Length: 222
Image (cartoon, rainbow, N blue to C red; front, side):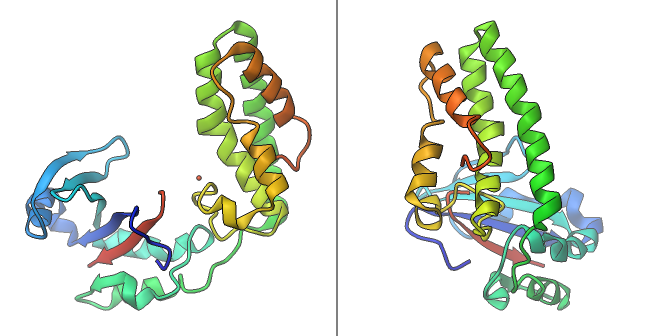
C-alpha cells in the first residue's frame, strides 16, 4: 500500500467462507472484473491471472476462519499505512480489525534475527563454495541469487536499520541503502562464468556488512 506505480501488479487475499472454499470459482469471480488472458494455479499455490490489458494478478484464496486470524502475525513482515483502504469488502468486520493491527510496522528483533541470518549465510555460502568447486557454475549462480542474496540484503538492512521492506529486501534498494552497500551488493550479481563467479563469491564473503513483489497492491476481501 502506498508504493504502487504503473509497473505494479495486483496481489490480493480473498477470504472465503470455510465450507465454500472447495467450490469457489476463482477465475469465474475474477472474470467479472475484466476478461482474463491467463489463469492458473502457480508454483506457490496462488491463483495467478493476466487480465486483457496485461495487468498481472496474484490472488490467495484463503479460508476466512484461520486466514483472518493469521493476518496480525504479519506485523514483522509488512505494514499497511492505510488498513481501511486495503480492505475492499468486509462483511463481518473481522478482517478490518485484523488489518488495523498492521498499521504500525514492527521491525525484526535484531539480535536473534542477526544470529539466524548469520547461521543461514554460513551454511548456504559453504554449500555455494562446494558447488563452485565441483564446477557447477549455473547451479552456483542460481543458489547465489535465489537463496544467498536475499539473506545478504536482509542482514544489510538490519545493520542499516532499514527494515521496512523486509519481506522483499530487494524492493526500493536504490532508495533505502547507501551507495556503498548497493555497489558491493551489485558485485555479487556475477555472470555465469567460472572465474568471474568465483572472484565475486570471494567478495561476498569478505565481511558481515556485505549487502526478498516488484511493488504490489495488497488488498483483501472477506
